[in-house]
Length: 349
Image 1 (cartoon, rainbow, N blue to C red):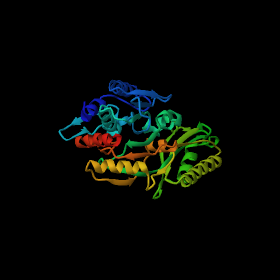
Image 2 (cartoon, helix red, strand yellow):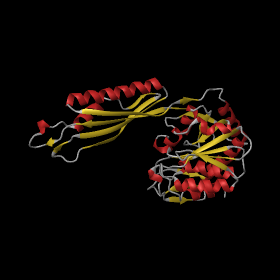
Image 3 (cartoon, rainbow, N blue to C red):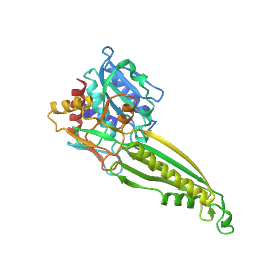
Image 4 (cartoon, one colour):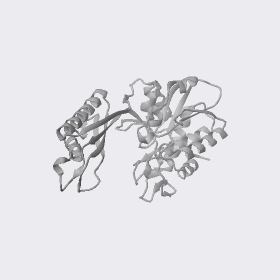
């Protein structure tokens, strides 16, 4: 099977986050049929390798897709794959997985990493430990998982954390005795109105994305909750924004006579690729060897490269050919799938 055939097959395998068993089984059957051995960890991440040489590069992809791509309504033309406009496609990141499988059939001296639950905060790669890779002396890692034509590298990516706030008030009848209640929704709304949201500066953003509360209009709500995310290339800026969101939640709860239960979770750290980075030099050479245009850009999203760099692996994210990921307009040109396989083969060699 070539990359396009692999991609066509992968699109038929549902792989929501933490429920990627079908994808994992297909990858394992395929890679072992090529002669690769593998190890896994307690999160279900898979690492495939050929016995023998220790020093080698690594190529990585995640096995899950966003819920909108669970069962994609695929339309295939001579030029591309897209959908009927009702689902996402799942090229993020089945395009890379397909190219990796096609490249691996050439029995390349590289490690191939497949992670779980990337789309829900890089949770699979966050569980990776340095000792998992210790026997292989990974020299550098390549993570094709970004929008755009093949040939561009991601030079920086932000860190991210979430803030979950739950407000506990006191229920009461909204008509008979509203004054005896403590309105949790109002307290939460007050906290949100005082908190930052949107773009803070060129390297920092935050967003209130989830809000829940209440059961009926005739009851003073005794519970409300929301979730923020904060991203930044600067850990101190990210911390300061999060601190301010937490302070406003605590202040609004106190003013309303409610209690605030707050959980702060750091999902991954930021990175900036140094100018003299060996991994950047290696991929630049591989891209130019194929006659492709080389480019660099920053991103406001994370990838498994964030967590790989955090455990000491020189990792870099690459564009992988798809357009408009996570949306009903997602698509990928067949020529980009072929270029991606060629690039991964050049990298491994």
